[in-house]
Image 1: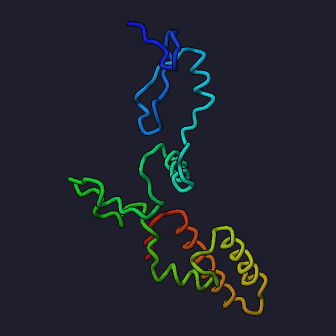
Image 2 (image 1 turned 45 degrees about the vertical axis):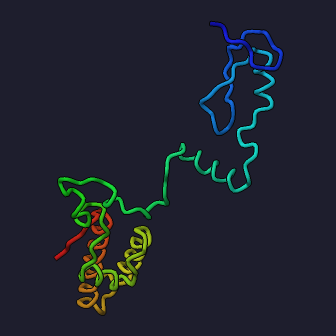
Image 3 (image 1 turned 30 degrees about the vertical axis):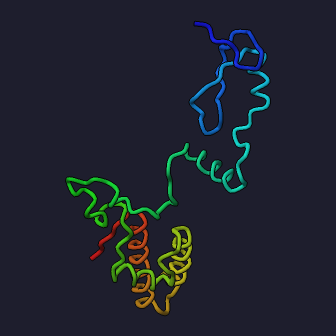
Length: 171
């Protein structure tokens, strides 16, 4: 059965679908080639929307109309069915924050840095302290300098190890 173009008084075959309205997007009118071109030129999917509705449509389209939330605001443990209790001990996984112990804290203090310092600054600070306390440079304080140099080197190793492993337990 041939469909006739739904444009007023048009008798040509209507084989090109066009949505009836924005709200009824899956229901179609059928037009001939001439009238579908006119329809496409004048069709505005967002016509009649307020500015706020238009903004919401844009935001929805960035996630393909799927619901979303800001990163880190959803507690996924409650939304996932977990029959084997895989996520119950989430703090013990590699995703947990670094476990800071007393040795690591004293290492940060010895290098005169705080735990939020990045690895490049740690290396820079170690280099300057190593030069300052190297036994060959401090001939008068040879024993004290040697002890301090060893302490600084050990503290540096502890801090660098904490950057390489997500969870550190140094005893």
